[in-house]
Image 1 (cartoon, one colour):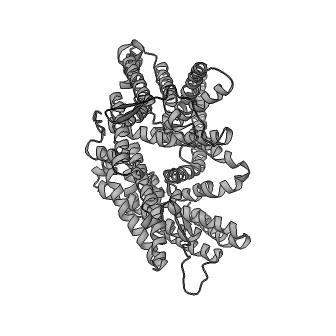
Image 2: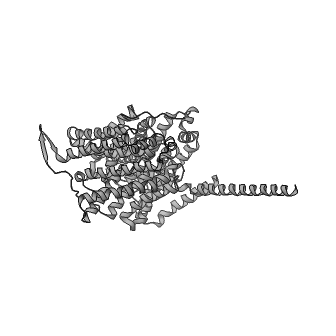
Image 3: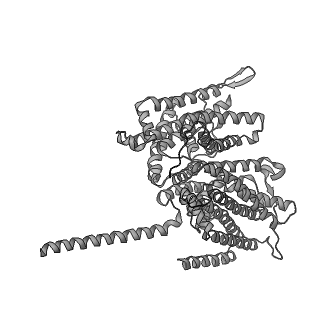
Length: 283
Length: 335
C-alpha cells in the first residue's frame, strides 16, 4: 500500500516529464529539483507566518513564474534550436545549481514539513495502512486524472495536444503555439508543487531530495511509454509497488535497483515503453 | 595547423614535466588527480564526442578499475597486473553496456548507462566481503617499479604522466585511423554510415568498450594515488560530473578533456573561497555555456573563425553589390 503511495508520487513527477517531452521535446533532468524547490518555498512562506493554505497558494504562483515561465524563457527557448542534448546538459547544470543553491543559501539540514493528512493507522486484514498513504495515493490519482481530463476534454487541452502532435499544423489552424507550450510548463510546475506537498511530509525537505525522485520518475516515464500520459501513471505505480515489495521480501539494500531492472527489461523487449507508440526512424 | 597542434602539445608537455618541481605535495597530488581525470574523460570523449553515444556511467568503470587494483594489491598481487586486468574487466563490461545502445538512442541510452552506474554502486556498497562496503578499502599501497620510490608523490606523478601520454597517443592514433573516421561517421549520420558498410553494431560496442577501458586504467591509478577508496567516489553524480567535464571542454575535440578536467578538478581548488556556492556557480556556468557555446570551450577559436569568414563573405557581397550598382548607374548615364 505504501508502495502505491510512493508510486503515485513517482507518477506525478513522471507525468510532468512526459508532458514537457510531448509539448516541446524537452527532457528535464532537474525534475526532482523542481519538486524540491517548492517544498522549500512553502517552508519559507510558512516561516513568514502565512497560513498553510496561503503558503501553498503563493508557492503555486511562484512555481508557475519560476519553474514555468523563467525555465521556459531562460533555458529552453534559447537552447531549442540546438536540439535535445544541450537542453539535457543545461538542465543537469540547473539541477546542480538548484541543489547546491538551496544547500548553501538556505539549509543543508533536513527540515520537517507538516503533513496534510492526519497521522492515523488502520489495521485491515493484518495489513497496516497509514492515513497519509491512502491520502497521498488518492490525491495523486485525482491530480493525474484531472490533468488527463483537462488535456483530453477541454478546448485548451486539445489545442495543447495538437501542438504536441504536429506543431506546424496547429499553428496553421490558428492555435497560439507558444502560449500552449507555456501552459504545459505551467502545468508541470503545478504538478511539481503537488508532488512536493505529498512527498515532503514523509521524506523531509532536504536539498538533495530531488535526486533519486527525478531518476525514478524518469525510469517510470520510460517504463510506461514516453509518448503516452497514461504510461506515466502505470510506470510510476509499477516502480513504487515493486520497490516496496523488493524491500520487504528480497533485500532493502538493493531497493534502488528495482526500477533499474524493470527499466532494462522494458528497454530490451519494448523500447517504446509498455503503452508507448513506436517511433519510426526517418532517413 | 598540424605543426601548431604539435607545438602546443610539446609546450604543454614541458610545462607538465616542470610544474611539479615548483609545487608542494598537495599541488602535485592535485595535478596527478587532474591527469587521472584526463585519462577517464579522454575515454569518455571517444564514446560521447567521437562516436556520438551518450554515456552517464563512466564513474562505474572508474570504480571497477579502482576496486580491481585495490583488491589485487590486497591479495598481494602486483599493481602492474591489476591495472590491465581492471581495464580488461571494464572493457568487457563496456561491451555489455553497449548492447542497450543498440536498442535505444540518445536520452534513453543516457539513462540506461546511469542505471548501470547505480547497479555497480549498489554492489560496491552492499557486498562487504568484496569491497568493504560503505567503509571502503583503506591502505591501498602504491605500486613498486624497479628502484623508483613511488611513495614519493612526485615520482608517482611522473608514472601517471607517462601513462597519460601513452593513452593519449593511442587515442590519437585511433582517431586518425580508419576506425576513428568510422566512429565520427557513426556520430554524424548513423544511417548513412550503415549504408556505407560500416558495421554499426561492432563500432558502437567498441566505442563503449574502449571508453570504459580508459576509465578502468584511470580508476586503478586513482586507487593507488589516494590510497583509500569508498563507494561515494563512484556515484551517478561523479558520472554526471565527468560527462559535464567532456561537454564543457568540447566533445569531439582531442584536447577537450584536458580543459574539461581542469574545470572539474583544479578549478574547485582555486575557488575554495566560494565554498558551498562553488557548485551553484558551476551549475549556472554550465547553463550559460550551453546557451552561448553548446559545443564547449574549445569551439571558441572555430566560432571566431566562422564569424570572421561570415564577415568577409558579407563584406565581399556588399562590395559586389555596390560595384554592380555603380555599373548599372554608369550604364544608365552613358545611355
